[in-house]
Image (cartoon, rainbow, N blue to C red; front, side, top):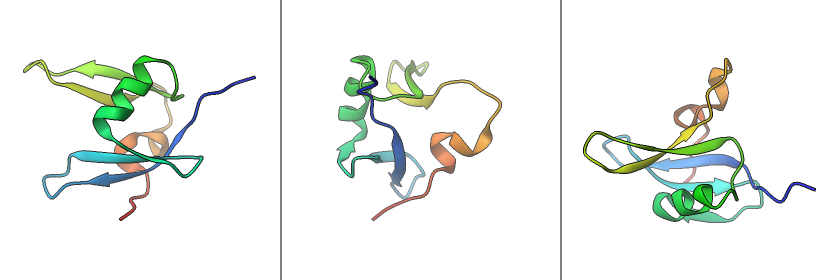
Length: 77
């Protein structure tokens, strides 16, 4: 049985950075909490990358499907 959740919606700040995510169970988490959850294997379809400046970020697992990329998911308020 798969106990992983899936990100279904995102919230962005005015700069276009993802600040929060909503999972398929309706729970909302800050991007930092979501990064920790992804590291623990609790969110499916994503992994944690590291920018050149050392900041960690969440990204979709590579595939050929563009509509499941985090930036293209519906937003919530």
